[in-house]
Image (tube, rainbow, N blue to C red):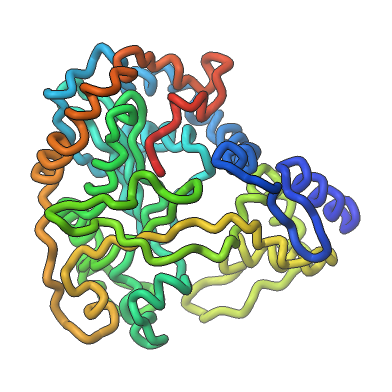
Length: 389
């Protein structure tokens, strides 16, 4: 594709998604509510569904068999089990299938990854998913909250992970199980899984062994202010601490099938930023590809700022997580949060009271979640969206 055609394609794509092009910036529609935010992400979500079609569509009927119907749930008998996802397994397919139903496009995680499905032992059905991956290197409000200097950040970012996907699936989402999945991100079991997988693993970039201590989990809200993370307490302590907002930058607006074209153009006409030899060759990440391409064809690189600011949360896994990450403490004073105790608290505080007030979960049918087998789109209606934030 030549320069002018690519310029026109990018402009058309952004307008089709609902962005307004003004001077050197793209801007959001006025009076944007949560449904409007979902609409802005619709093309990128649809693209993810299209990409997954070849591998997941032939298995959809079997995967839907792992989603509970309302009559398979007895709230008082729910018994969650946190199951680590093994690459190449049926659980991995289920994790990927569930991700397709999020209202915004989710990544597959970067670098180090831990993925979990949460299964209800009373019926063997999926309750929710949790995915952790490497955090971004620079995040202003996170770094200020920790109190990081440059050297401490470079040394201790390895002790931080970011929850790139987190939430409950229907019918458990009707029972506020998104709050349970959120609390499980802070559980002893997640810390232990991280230690098993990354303790004594070799860092190619740093040329040293990592000790596998996870001090902090971060995440962002999906659609404005979070109804799941805010005010979520355990033993009188906030589990998720609000620490600020993102700057409203990213590349989802180029992820609706347009990115592959941009990538091809950048590979042919743009030079990657120089990196350390041990990091390999090529572009650093998707953002660099898009930025280099936009500049090369004469479009503003500011178009990487979509303007959607997401709330940032920190989940300290120890009483002294910040001091440890600043390099002031050498040992972590862990919060003790066993998964079974977290569930006992959640059941009495949220699950059982909700089941008595709201019985919508009883009429849920997994067919409502079909992506390809019916005309119901991924994400479906309001009732079928995962309980994320």
